[in-house]
Image (cartoon, rainbow over all chains, first blue to last red; front, side, top):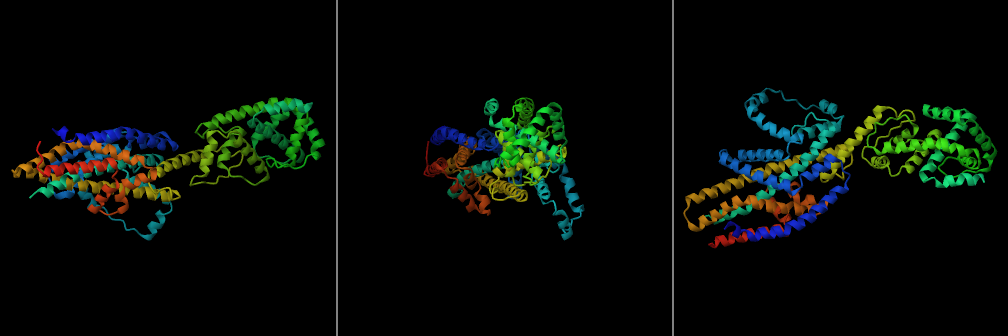
Length: 205
Length: 364
């Protein structure tokens, strides 16, 4: 019954996708191969763009979101649910990286540590003295401008604060590719849900 | 006749070996200069080779020197390689002396060996090769050094130009050319005999690695190619990562909203007993359970669609949110419209038609 409902969509999608997918993948791959390739960067770029990875991520994401929905049940408004969804999505993304990159391992590890540290952190934030950003400090730290930016980048990529510069750049490349995939997956999921939901809202008397 | 003896050898030599020949000539020229003017030479290696020459080919070189003295006046300046008249004189001198036949066999054999080894070493990527020989010095220095203008240096740099022209296909020169185009081109003035400094070599290797990785980042981050300099590029990269993370947060919030709506809809199902409404809710539930499958089908279209466009355009449909910068729901509609290609458009119309039919009381 369900299949009869959605066969037409299925077939059109399937007809359109394999050949075009093959063609596009060939084009995109050749486009990528024309660039000078070292092993790490090329592999990381390709890894997050294959359809297989995206399918794996999408299915895992859906499962995890379903579990989240069951757990939270709209307890503390939307923001907490949003945070949970984001954490779940990040964790699923890190899991699909299969532990090869540093940031993925850090993301998966922080989940365990965060639940332990939740109580300690509330006390620590009050005790720390906030540093006033004086002009002298700014002038002092402005000299190695590139190094400062590398530090900021290290803070953005999870688990890469004390990482050497070439490794940091590698991690950043992989992280950016993974984030792009995550954004695309979540966008398509949201689009599907948006297509589903408003109809029910409208037809409700 | 003497020329006939020597010329087939010259002709059989490839262009690469001709440079060896010229190097040899230059070497002999150097030797003569040393003998004549007693100019000090910088590198110990040259002295070694000169000593080698002197020990082996003393008589030959003396004879060539005497010939040079005789024929030096006959040759004018040549535009060749910028060596000056003396080089041309040496050229003529060498081609005319009979004694020169033996010299190329020895020294050019040595030179050839050196150059071959040089090429094999240069074809590797690592720069931490042993820099004992002069030829290796030459090729590596070509990459590091700009053309110096001292008279000695001029000869050396033109020599290294020769070696570069000879090993044109080697990776090192291509890397050198690409390195010159890099953003952070650093002038390194390293003279002969100072390239054995492992620190500078290591530093150069490290910088090359970093610049290569920055180049990959440049490819993946949109809008990075316009900015020059590492600081600007890093700025762009940081902005991009932050924007991606913000997008993820925004999308997670959107998903939370949609999920709550769907939950309410499901709850409605249990509250209301209306037949048509139940069917609609059932459809939604089926949709929910099936969207995993559809998501894959739909999702496979998205990367296909986006990958088909050229690299610049890939970013535009993917990140309209990034460019708009607003968290409005209208942006979402915009993203839907911008990312519509034929398959996704058909998908949407079909899904809408489904729900239209359901609202009309579709029974199955």
